[in-house]
Length: 264
Ligand SMILES: C[S@@+](CC[C@H](N)C(=O)[O-])C[C@H]1O[C@@H](n2cnc3c(N)ncnc32)[C@H](O)[C@@H]1O
View 1 (cartoon, rainbow, N blue to C red):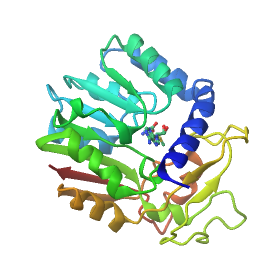
View 2 (view 1 turned 135 degrees about the vertical axis):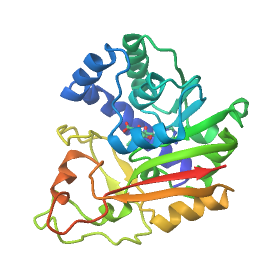
View 3 (view 1 turned 180 degrees about the vertical axis):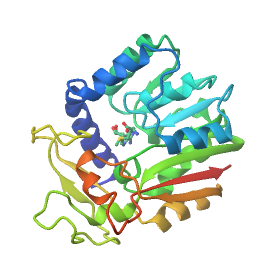
View 4 (view 1 turned 60 degrees about the vertical axis):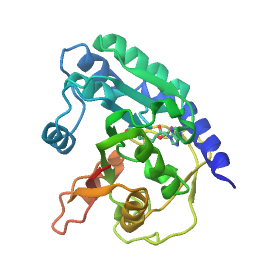
């Protein structure tokens, strides 16, 4: 399969999953939340790094912005122009709805992020890529070229992501604490079903693929695109789907998430 085949499969799976993201408690929390001025759904790590860098008056892009809840939170922190890029028209509709509730202006651009129009090149102070994006990308070097070209010189890429060590575990198996996947796995994992963050949906028709990228793959790809590492922290907190909560707050902790800041 080629990159475009994986992207088409992932787009179909996400479009089919969109309905589940507006049926659950999270959607109600978002609609209630964005009705209040200044609401943010960002966690403490994300908030701290954005406050430290400073977002007020900055032009911000989010690649793979889903329903734009994080982009709207950044806008509520005072960012100027906010542009979200995403492939799923269904999720962008939810983003537009949240923007209306928040009375905020953001620009949502539909389509494959590998085909972002070059009029956006070099126009952002910050590019944000959050939680669970790299695993959808067959080739990280090609993917990292996107933030590198969108950023102004001196702009920053901010990435709060799931730690790849988490890929070694499956909370659904009989012995969930025994590693069951190779950290260095080369082949993508074929998965079925709707994609939801609390593992509640049971629909099965959407086949999609998850790619394992090591930490060195992530860093090397960004460095090869001309970005330089400014900050890197590892955290024991689960930011993946809620079924992975069983791996946090144990006597022996493991890295479950990380924060990476790269400068252009
Ligand atoms: C796990 S979500 C992460 C987004 C956001 N952080 C969130 O928590 O909702 C990954 C998103 O990347 C999107 N995506 C994957 N490949 C893409 C592509 N080639 N172009 C645009 N979006 C893509 C998927 O549709 C999905 O919504």
